[in-house]
Length: 361
Image 1: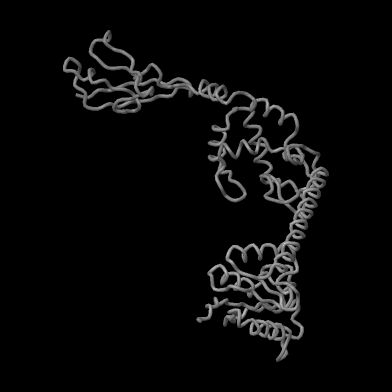
Image 2: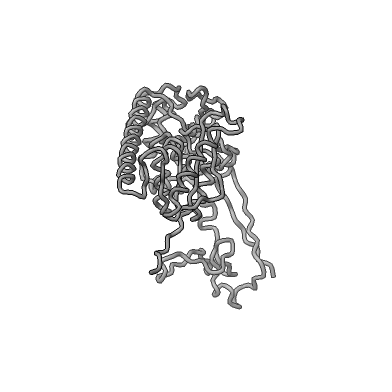
Protein backbone atom coordinates (compact mmCIF):
# COMPACT_ATOMS: atom_id res chain seq x y z
CA UNK A 1 0.00 0.00 0.00
CA UNK A 2 1.52 3.34 -1.06
CA UNK A 3 1.92 6.15 1.47
CA UNK A 4 0.01 9.38 0.82
CA UNK A 5 2.15 12.16 -0.61
CA UNK A 6 2.75 14.87 2.00
CA UNK A 7 2.61 18.40 0.60
CA UNK A 8 5.78 20.37 1.26
CA UNK A 9 5.22 23.55 3.26
CA UNK A 10 7.96 26.19 2.99
CA UNK A 11 8.45 27.85 6.39
CA UNK A 12 9.93 31.32 6.94
CA UNK A 13 11.26 32.28 10.37
CA UNK A 14 10.91 35.92 11.41
CA UNK A 15 12.83 37.35 14.36
CA UNK A 16 12.90 40.83 15.89
CA UNK A 17 14.42 42.72 18.83
CA UNK A 18 13.33 46.23 19.76
CA UNK A 19 16.66 47.51 21.08
CA UNK A 20 20.18 47.10 19.76
CA UNK A 21 21.45 46.14 23.20
CA UNK A 22 23.18 42.76 23.12
CA UNK A 23 23.05 42.35 19.34
CA UNK A 24 26.84 42.54 19.21
CA UNK A 25 27.08 39.26 21.16
CA UNK A 26 27.99 36.05 19.39
CA UNK A 27 24.68 34.46 20.47
CA UNK A 28 22.01 37.12 20.90
CA UNK A 29 18.23 37.26 21.18
CA UNK A 30 17.72 36.91 17.42
CA UNK A 31 19.75 33.70 17.40
CA UNK A 32 17.74 32.32 20.34
CA UNK A 33 14.44 33.06 18.59
CA UNK A 34 15.62 31.46 15.36
CA UNK A 35 16.89 28.37 17.14
CA UNK A 36 13.52 27.80 18.85
CA UNK A 37 11.62 28.33 15.58
CA UNK A 38 13.87 25.98 13.62
CA UNK A 39 13.43 23.32 16.29
CA UNK A 40 9.64 23.66 16.01
CA UNK A 41 9.80 23.35 12.23
CA UNK A 42 11.94 20.23 12.58
CA UNK A 43 9.29 18.72 14.87
CA UNK A 44 6.73 19.21 12.11
CA UNK A 45 8.84 17.57 9.41
CA UNK A 46 6.36 14.71 9.13
CA UNK A 47 3.73 17.28 8.14
CA UNK A 48 5.90 18.43 5.25
CA UNK A 49 7.39 21.50 6.93
CA UNK A 50 10.75 22.61 5.53
CA UNK A 51 12.84 25.67 6.41
CA UNK A 52 13.50 28.25 3.70
CA UNK A 53 17.10 29.44 3.36
CA UNK A 54 16.43 33.17 3.53
CA UNK A 55 16.60 34.76 6.98
CA UNK A 56 14.24 37.58 7.95
CA UNK A 57 15.70 39.41 10.95
CA UNK A 58 15.12 42.93 12.31
CA UNK A 59 17.41 44.06 15.10
CA UNK A 60 16.91 47.32 16.96
CA UNK A 61 13.51 48.12 15.41
CA UNK A 62 10.24 48.66 17.29
CA UNK A 63 7.29 46.35 16.73
CA UNK A 64 4.98 49.36 16.54
CA UNK A 65 5.86 50.00 12.90
CA UNK A 66 5.75 47.98 9.70
CA UNK A 67 8.73 49.87 8.25
CA UNK A 68 11.20 47.04 8.86
CA UNK A 69 13.63 45.75 6.19
CA UNK A 70 13.42 42.11 7.21
CA UNK A 71 9.63 42.17 7.44
CA UNK A 72 9.34 43.89 4.06
CA UNK A 73 11.53 41.25 2.41
CA UNK A 74 9.42 38.47 3.92
CA UNK A 75 6.15 40.09 2.81
CA UNK A 76 7.56 40.49 -0.70
CA UNK A 77 8.47 36.79 -0.82
CA UNK A 78 4.97 35.94 0.41
CA UNK A 79 3.44 37.97 -2.41
CA UNK A 80 5.75 36.11 -4.83
CA UNK A 81 4.45 32.76 -3.57
CA UNK A 82 7.75 31.63 -1.97
CA UNK A 83 6.42 31.10 1.59
CA UNK A 84 3.65 28.85 2.94
CA UNK A 85 4.08 29.22 6.74
CA UNK A 86 5.38 32.12 8.87
CA UNK A 87 6.93 31.01 12.17
CA UNK A 88 7.74 33.41 15.05
CA UNK A 89 8.88 32.97 18.64
CA UNK A 90 6.03 35.12 20.01
CA UNK A 91 3.19 37.07 18.41
CA UNK A 92 4.67 40.40 19.52
CA UNK A 93 7.82 39.61 17.49
CA UNK A 94 5.72 40.07 14.36
CA UNK A 95 3.85 43.16 15.56
CA UNK A 96 2.86 44.93 18.76
CA UNK A 97 0.02 46.75 17.04
CA UNK A 98 -3.25 44.89 16.60
CA UNK A 99 -4.10 47.08 13.63
CA UNK A 100 -0.77 46.29 11.93
CA UNK A 101 -1.17 42.63 12.81
CA UNK A 102 -4.54 42.61 11.07
CA UNK A 103 -2.92 44.06 7.94
CA UNK A 104 -0.27 41.34 7.94
CA UNK A 105 -2.81 38.56 8.42
CA UNK A 106 -4.84 39.98 5.54
CA UNK A 107 -1.79 39.51 3.29
CA UNK A 108 -1.28 36.01 4.71
CA UNK A 109 -4.87 35.00 3.93
CA UNK A 110 -4.74 36.48 0.44
CA UNK A 111 -1.71 34.34 -0.37
CA UNK A 112 -2.77 31.19 1.51
CA UNK A 113 -0.05 31.56 4.17
CA UNK A 114 -0.53 30.26 7.73
CA UNK A 115 0.94 31.82 10.88
CA UNK A 116 2.48 29.98 13.85
CA UNK A 117 3.71 31.22 17.24
CA UNK A 118 6.14 28.74 18.84
CA UNK A 119 5.73 29.68 22.53
CA UNK A 120 1.99 30.37 22.40
CA UNK A 121 -0.95 28.16 21.60
CA UNK A 122 -1.45 29.88 18.32
CA UNK A 123 -1.44 28.02 15.05
CA UNK A 124 -3.74 29.01 12.21
CA UNK A 125 -3.51 25.49 10.80
CA UNK A 126 -5.80 24.35 13.67
CA UNK A 127 -9.36 25.37 14.51
CA UNK A 128 -8.32 26.72 17.94
CA UNK A 129 -5.60 28.82 16.37
CA UNK A 130 -8.04 30.29 13.87
CA UNK A 131 -10.50 31.07 16.69
CA UNK A 132 -7.77 32.88 18.62
CA UNK A 133 -6.84 34.80 15.49
CA UNK A 134 -10.46 35.87 14.90
CA UNK A 135 -10.68 37.12 18.49
CA UNK A 136 -7.51 39.15 18.04
CA UNK A 137 -8.76 40.55 14.75
CA UNK A 138 -12.03 41.56 16.43
CA UNK A 139 -10.05 43.52 18.99
CA UNK A 140 -7.97 45.00 16.17
CA UNK A 141 -11.10 46.19 14.37
CA UNK A 142 -12.41 47.63 17.63
CA UNK A 143 -9.11 49.44 18.18
CA UNK A 144 -9.15 50.90 14.67
CA UNK A 145 -12.74 52.13 15.04
CA UNK A 146 -12.10 53.69 18.45
CA UNK A 147 -8.95 55.37 17.13
CA UNK A 148 -10.80 56.72 14.10
CA UNK A 149 -13.56 58.11 16.32
CA UNK A 150 -10.98 59.78 18.55
CA UNK A 151 -9.30 61.37 15.54
CA UNK A 152 -12.61 62.58 14.10
CA UNK A 153 -13.63 64.05 17.44
CA UNK A 154 -10.25 65.74 17.83
CA UNK A 155 -10.39 67.24 14.33
CA UNK A 156 -13.96 68.46 14.86
CA UNK A 157 -13.10 70.02 18.23
CA UNK A 158 -9.99 71.67 16.80
CA UNK A 159 -11.89 73.02 13.81
CA UNK A 160 -14.59 74.45 16.06
CA UNK A 161 -11.82 76.33 17.87
CA UNK A 162 -10.64 77.65 14.52
CA UNK A 163 -7.34 75.78 14.59
CA UNK A 164 -5.40 74.89 11.44
CA UNK A 165 -5.40 71.10 11.04
CA UNK A 166 -2.71 70.74 8.42
CA UNK A 167 -2.63 70.27 4.68
CA UNK A 168 -1.66 72.67 1.91
CA UNK A 169 -2.20 76.26 3.13
CA UNK A 170 -4.43 78.48 0.98
CA UNK A 171 -2.75 80.82 -1.49
CA UNK A 172 -1.77 83.91 0.49
CA UNK A 173 -0.98 82.05 3.73
CA UNK A 174 1.96 80.16 5.18
CA UNK A 175 2.22 77.67 8.05
CA UNK A 176 4.51 78.40 10.97
CA UNK A 177 4.52 76.40 14.22
CA UNK A 178 1.28 74.72 13.10
CA UNK A 179 -0.35 78.15 12.78
CA UNK A 180 -1.80 79.73 9.64
CA UNK A 181 -0.16 83.11 9.06
CA UNK A 182 -0.72 85.72 6.34
CA UNK A 183 2.05 85.81 3.73
CA UNK A 184 2.00 89.47 2.74
CA UNK A 185 3.80 88.90 -0.58
CA UNK A 186 1.14 86.56 -1.96
CA UNK A 187 -1.73 88.05 0.06
CA UNK A 188 -1.41 91.17 -2.09
CA UNK A 189 -2.19 89.03 -5.15
CA UNK A 190 -5.27 87.60 -3.39
CA UNK A 191 -6.60 91.07 -2.61
CA UNK A 192 -6.00 92.17 -6.21
CA UNK A 193 -7.78 89.07 -7.57
CA UNK A 194 -10.89 89.72 -5.48
CA UNK A 195 -10.90 93.44 -6.32
CA UNK A 196 -10.36 92.81 -10.02
CA UNK A 197 -13.18 90.25 -10.13
CA UNK A 198 -15.54 92.90 -8.75
CA UNK A 199 -14.60 95.08 -11.73
CA UNK A 200 -14.87 92.54 -14.58
CA UNK A 201 -17.14 89.82 -13.11
CA UNK A 202 -15.55 87.05 -15.19
CA UNK A 203 -13.23 84.30 -13.95
CA UNK A 204 -12.27 83.48 -17.53
CA UNK A 205 -11.07 87.01 -18.23
CA UNK A 206 -9.53 87.23 -14.77
CA UNK A 207 -7.53 84.04 -15.39
CA UNK A 208 -6.08 85.64 -18.53
CA UNK A 209 -5.04 88.75 -16.61
CA UNK A 210 -3.56 86.67 -13.80
CA UNK A 211 -1.53 84.71 -16.33
CA UNK A 212 -0.39 87.91 -18.04
CA UNK A 213 0.89 89.22 -14.70
CA UNK A 214 2.83 85.98 -14.16
CA UNK A 215 1.02 85.07 -10.95
CA UNK A 216 1.43 81.36 -10.13
CA UNK A 217 0.37 78.99 -7.38
CA UNK A 218 2.86 78.26 -4.56
CA UNK A 219 3.82 75.10 -6.49
CA UNK A 220 4.46 77.09 -9.64
CA UNK A 221 1.36 75.93 -11.51
CA UNK A 222 -0.76 78.11 -13.76
CA UNK A 223 -3.85 79.68 -12.17
CA UNK A 224 -6.94 78.85 -14.22
CA UNK A 225 -10.58 79.79 -13.69
CA UNK A 226 -11.28 76.63 -11.65
CA UNK A 227 -8.53 77.63 -9.23
CA UNK A 228 -10.03 81.12 -9.03
CA UNK A 229 -13.50 79.71 -8.28
CA UNK A 230 -12.07 77.61 -5.44
CA UNK A 231 -10.15 80.61 -4.14
CA UNK A 232 -13.20 82.87 -4.11
CA UNK A 233 -15.21 80.18 -2.28
CA UNK A 234 -12.54 79.51 0.36
CA UNK A 235 -13.83 80.99 3.61
CA UNK A 236 -10.32 80.93 5.07
CA UNK A 237 -9.81 84.28 3.34
CA UNK A 238 -12.38 85.90 5.65
CA UNK A 239 -10.78 84.34 8.73
CA UNK A 240 -13.04 81.31 9.11
CA UNK A 241 -12.40 77.58 9.53
CA UNK A 242 -14.74 75.10 7.83
CA UNK A 243 -15.55 71.56 8.97
CA UNK A 244 -18.13 69.44 7.13
CA UNK A 245 -19.89 72.46 5.70
CA UNK A 246 -20.05 74.43 8.96
CA UNK A 247 -17.98 77.58 9.44
CA UNK A 248 -16.32 78.69 12.68
CA UNK A 249 -14.22 81.75 13.57
CA UNK A 250 -10.60 80.90 12.79
CA UNK A 251 -7.45 81.64 14.73
CA UNK A 252 -5.82 83.13 11.62
CA UNK A 253 -6.21 86.66 10.27
CA UNK A 254 -8.47 87.41 7.31
CA UNK A 255 -7.09 88.64 3.99
CA UNK A 256 -10.44 89.71 2.51
CA UNK A 257 -12.96 91.85 4.37
CA UNK A 258 -16.54 90.66 4.69
CA UNK A 259 -17.94 93.41 2.47
CA UNK A 260 -15.72 92.42 -0.47
CA UNK A 261 -16.57 88.75 0.11
CA UNK A 262 -20.31 89.43 -0.01
CA UNK A 263 -20.01 91.52 -3.19
CA UNK A 264 -17.98 88.80 -4.92
CA UNK A 265 -20.49 86.11 -4.00
CA UNK A 266 -23.37 88.26 -5.14
CA UNK A 267 -21.77 88.19 -8.59
CA UNK A 268 -20.96 84.46 -8.38
CA UNK A 269 -24.59 83.67 -7.57
CA UNK A 270 -25.67 85.06 -10.92
CA UNK A 271 -26.13 82.66 -13.81
CA UNK A 272 -22.75 81.84 -15.44
CA UNK A 273 -24.38 82.23 -18.86
CA UNK A 274 -25.70 85.65 -17.92
CA UNK A 275 -22.27 86.79 -16.74
CA UNK A 276 -20.66 85.40 -19.91
CA UNK A 277 -23.21 87.24 -22.06
CA UNK A 278 -22.48 90.49 -20.24
CA UNK A 279 -18.77 89.97 -20.76
CA UNK A 280 -19.26 89.40 -24.48
CA UNK A 281 -21.55 92.44 -24.72
CA UNK A 282 -18.87 94.64 -23.16
CA UNK A 283 -16.32 93.44 -25.72
CA UNK A 284 -16.89 95.40 -28.95
CA UNK A 285 -17.05 93.45 -32.22
CA UNK A 286 -14.67 95.77 -34.01
CA UNK A 287 -15.29 94.35 -37.51
CA UNK A 288 -19.04 93.92 -37.21
CA UNK A 289 -20.75 95.19 -40.38
CA UNK A 290 -17.50 96.41 -41.89
CA UNK A 291 -16.63 93.37 -44.02
CA UNK A 292 -18.45 93.31 -47.34
CA UNK A 293 -18.23 91.64 -50.70
CA UNK A 294 -16.69 93.90 -53.30
CA UNK A 295 -18.22 94.92 -56.64
CA UNK A 296 -17.72 97.94 -58.95
CA UNK A 297 -21.36 98.72 -58.29
CA UNK A 298 -21.94 99.70 -54.64
CA UNK A 299 -25.53 98.49 -54.97
CA UNK A 300 -24.19 94.90 -55.20
CA UNK A 301 -22.28 95.16 -51.93
CA UNK A 302 -23.57 92.96 -49.14
CA UNK A 303 -22.27 92.11 -45.70
CA UNK A 304 -20.45 88.83 -45.15
CA UNK A 305 -22.13 86.52 -42.69
CA UNK A 306 -21.98 83.04 -41.22
CA UNK A 307 -23.90 80.10 -42.67
CA UNK A 308 -26.06 77.77 -40.59
CA UNK A 309 -25.81 74.05 -41.26
CA UNK A 310 -29.27 72.59 -40.63
CA UNK A 311 -27.89 69.06 -40.40
CA UNK A 312 -25.24 69.61 -37.74
CA UNK A 313 -26.94 72.65 -36.22
CA UNK A 314 -23.61 74.45 -36.24
CA UNK A 315 -22.32 77.63 -37.75
CA UNK A 316 -20.09 77.10 -40.73
CA UNK A 317 -17.48 79.27 -42.33
CA UNK A 318 -16.43 78.16 -45.81
CA UNK A 319 -12.76 78.88 -46.52
CA UNK A 320 -11.89 80.58 -43.26
CA UNK A 321 -10.17 83.72 -44.53
CA UNK A 322 -9.73 86.07 -41.59
CA UNK A 323 -12.81 84.26 -40.19
CA UNK A 324 -15.07 85.83 -42.83
CA UNK A 325 -17.02 84.02 -45.51
CA UNK A 326 -16.05 84.51 -49.15
CA UNK A 327 -18.80 83.29 -51.45
CA UNK A 328 -17.91 81.56 -54.70
CA UNK A 329 -20.38 83.90 -56.43
CA UNK A 330 -18.26 86.85 -55.39
CA UNK A 331 -15.50 85.64 -57.68
CA UNK A 332 -17.59 85.58 -60.86
CA UNK A 333 -16.05 87.31 -63.92
CA UNK A 334 -18.43 90.27 -63.69
CA UNK A 335 -16.60 91.29 -60.50
CA UNK A 336 -13.09 92.64 -60.47
CA UNK A 337 -10.42 89.90 -60.52
CA UNK A 338 -9.34 89.21 -56.97
CA UNK A 339 -5.75 88.25 -56.28
CA UNK A 340 -5.27 89.06 -52.64
CA UNK A 341 -6.92 90.85 -49.76
CA UNK A 342 -5.31 93.13 -47.27
CA UNK A 343 -7.25 94.33 -44.28
CA UNK A 344 -6.01 97.51 -42.73
CA UNK A 345 -7.30 98.11 -39.22
CA UNK A 346 -7.15 101.49 -37.62
CA UNK A 347 -8.07 102.09 -34.03
CA UNK A 348 -9.52 105.41 -33.01
CA UNK A 349 -9.37 105.92 -29.22
CA UNK A 350 -9.53 102.15 -28.81
CA UNK A 351 -13.26 102.08 -29.48
CA UNK A 352 -13.92 102.35 -33.21
CA UNK A 353 -12.17 100.51 -36.01
CA UNK A 354 -12.40 101.11 -39.72
CA UNK A 355 -11.45 98.56 -42.30
CA UNK A 356 -10.47 99.02 -45.91
CA UNK A 357 -10.11 96.17 -48.35
CA UNK A 358 -7.64 96.66 -51.14
CA UNK A 359 -8.07 94.47 -54.21
CA UNK A 360 -5.07 94.19 -56.45
CA UNK A 361 -5.30 93.40 -60.16
